[in-house]
Length: 84
Image (tube, rainbow, N blue to C red; front, side, top):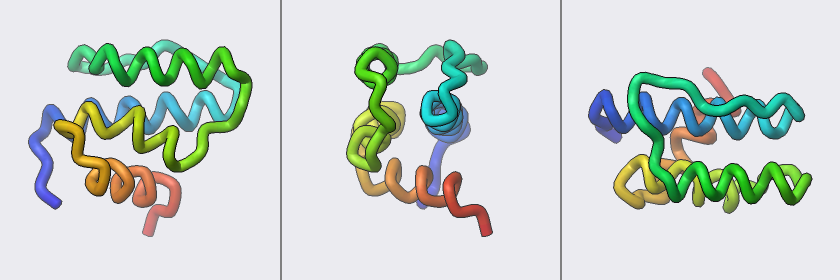
């Protein structure tokens, strides 16, 4: 799974934002690149719902930053959640 540096930065920012959301410590994502508006809308909707994001929710947030590649998104999320 080869990512461009832009994809990696954007997706890591989104995953970190989802983690903050799960902890109830939502902060606006910060990073070197602007985040995909679709991803931000999905994070905002999750925050407003008050529910913990499922893997499907997380993939829906991260995939747009990876050109829509859901398998890459899931792999990155799993790597974040289960570091070696």
